[in-house]
Amino acid sequence: MAPTARTGTDASVPRLPHHVVVLAQPGVLALDFGIPIQAFGDWEGSPYRVTVCTEHPGPVPIHGGPSLLVDRGLDALADADTIVVPGLVPPDPPSPPLRTALAEAAARGARMVSICTGAFVLAGAGLLDGRRATTHWQRAAELAHRYPSVRIEPQVLYVDEGDVLTSAGVAAGIDLCLHIIRADLGAAIANQRARALVAAPHRAGGQAQYIAHPTPPERGGGLDGLRAWALRHLDEPLTVDLLAQRARLSRRTLIRRFHEETGLAPMQWLSDARVDRARELLEGSDLSIAAVARRSGLGTPANLRTLFKRRLGVPPSTYRATFDTAAHPAPGTL
Image (cartoon, rainbow, N blue to C red; front, side):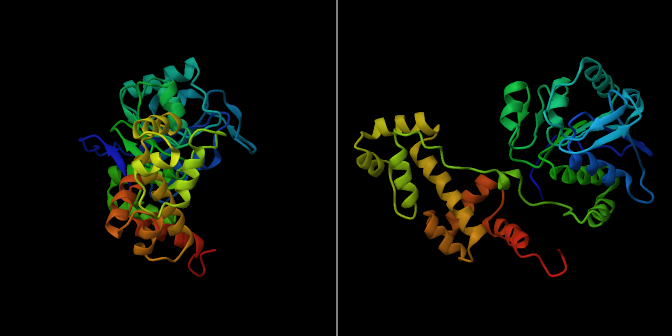
């Protein structure tokens, strides 16, 4: 099952028919916008009624594309049971009228949902204060900086806080919509929708699988040379004392300098680098798990599985299968 964050209270069965309003704003992301419309409204017998609205009815520019023609204004939010805010670029805060409309809808009990950078809109309306939330991993740090009262969970696919739900980047909106359908109507119907959307009912892992973890940029000095050397010798036994000796520094000075330049202790940096090397080997080779563990410097398959799952949320075999399927799709799938 995909990593989530939930409250201890199960969602109640919704009032049916259920009015879902999708908010379109200038710069809306096309895929984010289309996901809730297709997930909730594009099937025979759907108990969801889907409406699209915008703050200023008329043409609404799509990010990187043409414009949508939306004829409903914010009045549509007045009787919405669920409000979905798709991602937008740039993720500007809501205007005062939109902020008021969202706050009033939430106060009367509407379920608030964001996809990707739509979380910035909910946060800007004060609806994420003191709550857990997520967004696209590339924007998670920005969301945390702009709205420090929000508890950001950057590695999960979605966060369920009961009446407020947020999803990670783009396609994670599918995971969240299926989760909502499952909570509303049960697993059987959610699985039917997943099959119709050609999507997994539950995705293993979280968006941490897709987060790039590059090595720190070259600074033209400091311990860059030592780190570059360490990256070439990850499969060898490396210790803080060995690194300090090679850098001709005391152990204490090495630890201090390492933290200043990378934000990490030397052994944590090595552990992260080794997991990244294991990722590369799992994505681009047919090596056995034992061989990947040796070549990445993680030693044993058990150690590889423990550190890999702790860092990325899935075991190495699941991670490999995900990229294997993408690189070698089954016949007839293209």
